[in-house]
Image 1 (cartoon, helix red, strand yellow):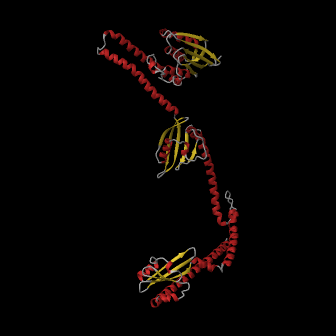
Image 2 (image 1 turned 120 degrees about the horizontal axis):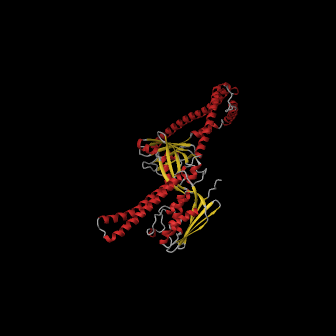
Length: 557
């Protein structure tokens, strides 16, 4: 090992020798520069003295060799130049050496040329008449001098460099070979330098610890992935730059987008303005929520920042499906509004008539008519309350354990038609019951409500002298009840909403007809309670047919 280090030191020594050559060249250059500068200064002094005594004649008769001599008047005009035509030279009063000579008597400057690798040195002296003599000389730069001095040594330096390179390659390979042959997974001290033994022991311990941590980390990632993938809620974790670190499939499903490996930022999941503002607020350190609409429904986005004491390290985003919740909230508001409206109308009438009666504002002959109005409005209130109670019972029974009984739909329809006979006679509407005796397992009360409301509507919305029919039939495993009438019919645009609570097709006409707007909603809930379906077919001006299908449970023997 010592020998290898010694050889490396020899290589460094060679580099030091090369550096010494550069240093000596630099010293030589400095000495040459100072000598040349002093020679130029003396030449300037001598030429100035000669011009003072002999004038221009001296300049015209003297050969100055490599030196450039310029005579400049006190106004800056060139009077004489040893290398150029004075008439072609511009004003020299702005030259640094000339300005200094005119001001203080002596001036000097240096100008470098990188392309020519030369330096021009200027010395100037002022004459007694105010004019200036400038002497300029060209000196080689350090680079030029270095190149000149290196030429004799080029072969020797090349040979030394080649030998040093070969030695360095052999030495470095020989030194690092044992180190490169170390198996980092199972480092062995016997096959390496003794000096590396402590390091290799630490590597073995570190490898064992890293392997255990990798196994634990892999297990943790698998557990985390399993947990998040089983979530129905969407989960996205992003760093402080909004790059997605991890996400589950529910996030993409709820937002209605497909997972794309090229999409690295959380903003690519949803392009809406609300989503972008919510994420930006969370990245700013504030918990944020927003509600966005997708093709699949309503989604609530909750974004929380992962804060450290000084900065936001990332964000955690939850996406929840609140479609049903929003629909229920909308239904609740609409139901409350409709109930309030439906209760207010008869109560206002009752209160107004009662107030007139209490204040003696009604003639005796009108008391009977007004009392009849009070009774009529009271009947509307009672009917409305009964329908609301029916809907409440349906909601309660959907949550409570079922207590079914065997119900003959044909007999039940006959009983309903019998109870509605008086209402039908008032409008001269005839009823017809056809079909078979079909028995289903269910709630007699709820099935009675279903058939009663369908038949009641068939009478209310029928034409004077019209008719309606009830047909009870069955197919394999299904009972079918069809109630059809010859009434006014329902426009196609309204068919999708007639089962909504308080929805009326023609509000102006519905006010003249007794009803609460809850009948078909009761029908839909009652049929759903039995696991069945209800559909409607209607033609304006010809009539409407409601078809109810209820599963027939197989009787136990």
